[in-house]
Image 1 (cartoon, rainbow over the protein chains, first blue to last red):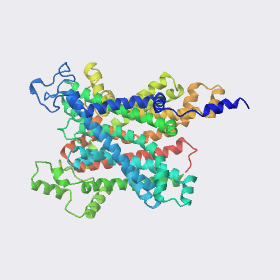
Image 2: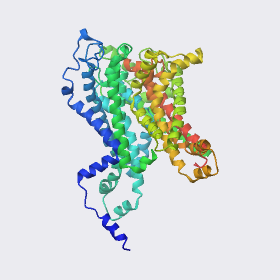
Image 3: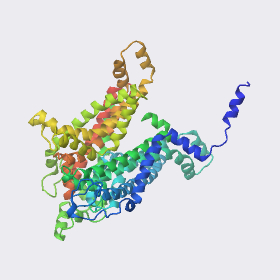
Length: 295
Length: 313
């Protein structure tokens, strides 16, 4: 019996300071830290673009076109003599704005529809049939169709990428809700007369949050990729805005003689997507151990 | 079993119906005048009126939808605004390169990814496992158009061992066909391979923890036989599922890859249609690709019952 006493004392530890909690989280989840640092770097570049690249991303200079990377033009110049470095730095803005807006919008709309669908039986069947149909259309194709029918603008690109992503969120949220609503504690809450919206907000919503945060990061990565893809195909951001996809699309014709026009925005794009994906993987492992084992 | 099959096949009908309704309604849901946008900035009022007439935008919604669905049932996907040719004919002409590209991509991706995933699971926690997982994360993150140009630069421009761009039909010989298709397939297959490798690893890892694997080992079965005959066989269902689900990514990627490698397939048809805002072609491509996606996933569901006799519906 005496042997158990010290163990009990061990359990009652003094509360840890916040810095210690953060440090331990970082040590256990290195990918989250690595991914979020990379992403943070990209966000800083995007916000302070004029500081990193003092020039004008649209300034034409036909005399110095197609220069290879050198001291004055780190990433070279394109066929109109524009500085690829300046354009690439400014391109970070479009990609991040689109990525963040799409993940926020599709999560909010998807969360709302998903909660409704999971909780109200009558409309569930209808909503899920519509979602199944939407999910059968490859996302980029649906976005292409919508872009073909509207004027090219960043807002329209965001909407066109958001709509195909919504069903993924709805399915996820609905799945969690269906699972939780059968739990005894929900039944208990309802039987003591807890109001519907309170059950939703206090019991269901917290359970949905972890998987939805993970999903939102993956949607952000997908949105950045789709925006670049759409712009590359000529169905995305208007060509006068230097987005990574646009820069690469313009460099296509010259890529055999001026490879740098495609290489540098491509690398920035890949690093950004990698950072968001790493963050997503790390968050998934940290927030949802059950899901982590399955993937 | 048969009842399940029939139910599963019937379930594809509402899905395709939603796709059709949605694709058709987009013309009406989009803000502004679609006829004016399709006609472009330089169009006169006459041009816009002509396009509105051609798309049937003057008639009531339900009448238009009825006509369109009726034609669709007979395989009529409408007429291209730009070339005046039937969309189905235009698509049929471009079908072969896309079909070949997606098929070779899937073959390459599966052949590369499944062994990688199995070995990663077998050697879980080692440097090999980490290498495969790193490949999987990178494969997700490298967009096909970046990877495509990197491969072109390496193999076609620097090493000069493969052609830069283009497509040769398989009817002109297998060698030239393979020469042209290998880089695009690797480009397109990267994401697929990453997804499949990851799913294979997880799935096999789960099976390797089962008692019957220990039994198989302890009765002296060779490791390769345990891995392939026992582990992979029992891990097959999630792997086949992910191949079905990732088919949508494959189609989306094919459009971009065809554009990078100048392959005259359905993707190029789509891109040309975007530039000319030829909406009937885009509509047709979506319907056919979504139909293919639904059919592939139907096939996947049916394959389940053969792969895993425990699954009873």
